[in-house]
Amino acid sequence: MDSSFPTRKPIEQNVGLGVVTGLLPAIRRQPLDMILILGVIGGAFIGVCLAEAVLLLAKAVAEDLLTRVGVPDVLIQLLFDVIAGALVLGVFALSPVFMIWMERKVSGRMQSRLGPMEVGGWHGWLQTIADGVKLFLKEDIIPRDADALLHRLAPVIVVLASFLCFLVVPFGNRLIAQDLNIGLLYILAISSVTVIGIVTAGWGSNNKYALLGGMRSAAQLVSYEIPRGLSVLGVIMIAGTLQMGQIVEKQAFVPFIILQPLGFLLFLISS
Image (cartoon, rainbow, N blue to C red):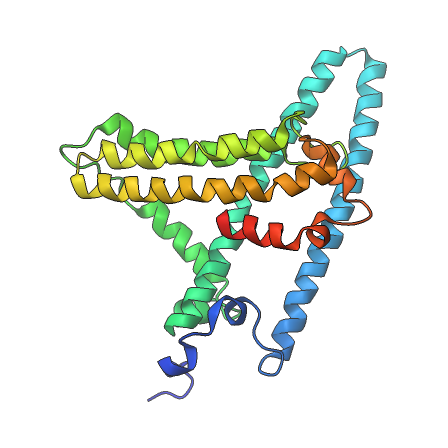
């Protein structure tokens, strides 16, 4: 057997490692990996701060130039809204890439799989690209007795509901698509629409087992909405507002995660 080929670790070494060991290996075993992960997180934070400063400067310069040229204020605001929407779309499109990579790392470590751990040489970073290529090459098969319209509409409803939640999320100072005065309530309401997409998928398949599975998933999501709604009450009481921009500004000195650690854990689990 070629010694250069990576071998599987015994399953008993990987079963029960959990999420923490999947994402952040123990310092005793992999100190360099921990340093690299912390460096990436720190670099991302610095990059976000620099990007925010550059965007604010570019917005101020562009606004001044457009005003001097004589462009109406309505068109200027429309232009900035389009740019903000493009930024939201970019974040929404790229975030699943990293989330799926982390999820595959956790499951790969627990299941003793080589792909998510070794592909690409550094922590299996090519696994996400391979998954993306696989998804693009997959054929969209509609069951013979299924409702074609509902079959195609169901995933659109789920993705659209998730995307619309980002419209009220502030990415920086005045970097927000729509700062609604009921932004937090808007997020809770729009996120509930995903239940409709799941039920539609089960119903549109014209299969009783798929319908039962969709109803089960919908019941789970509805049950999670109650603790999720209760967990944000503490945030509303502290901030005194439902507006996302003001909620972020209220955390300039003390983050609410310090004041409401149990509420954060409850929201994280239920979401």
